[in-house]
Image (cartoon, rainbow, N blue to C red):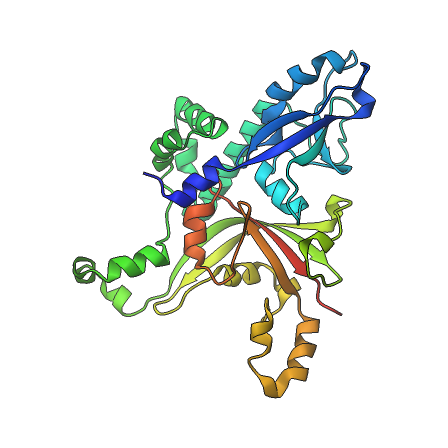
Length: 340
């Protein structure tokens, strides 16, 4: 039985209000917007079978090339819908107002999309990448039968967690132990008898975690999320597709903060701060600390699956509960840029 956090991920949805772009309106009056509940783990092109029939009587003749934008920014169809929302709406907007276009595909910005087939190819390719990062090869994905691959993809499209849970063990992805459950298990007499010598000795354990990090760097400081400037172009966002080298040593907790900072040395430096509490720990060196903070970046917000994360949460819990079905952890980060 899947735990509550994983259920939250699979059941998560975003209310969309989708407007037909005025250049595609061939009827009078223009049609009202379509209201759609979009799965967080889904992809915008998978909504086309719902949206196209709604707008079909208002469309001009011609061949369709469907794409979406948010406030003029074309939306990358291969990024999960929930990640797009977390990234582009610092202050969550509900319903999320998107515009759909049936003409004028911006091929200079978006890679071509042939509907569901392209989305499925992207999903399977990401699954192969993730397995290579985790296991060192992708043979289990390659060796899945065609019917199992189809069923796995169908479970994601339909948001069917039970079907996915039955099929995903065939991928034989290596896992990391959750620090919370590990502490609980080690407290029982039965598990203490089974602890290995290397565990007792505090051996460092490592794992490679597939992470896609989306970073927005803001020059000016802000107090409220509604004060964050709107994104004008994808050039405002840095995209990092790097594995996190997960390190766990007995007595130490590898946190989400550790993971993000390991991926962002160019933004954060070696001693990132995310709250005023840390700044006040050394009252004798306040001026020096303030100067150091100005030279470094500051993580203002980290969002995963719509959750504004506490950075001290164990990274193992995040990995085991908030990953997307293709075994990537998608993290949207808002960083106050360092002063140079």
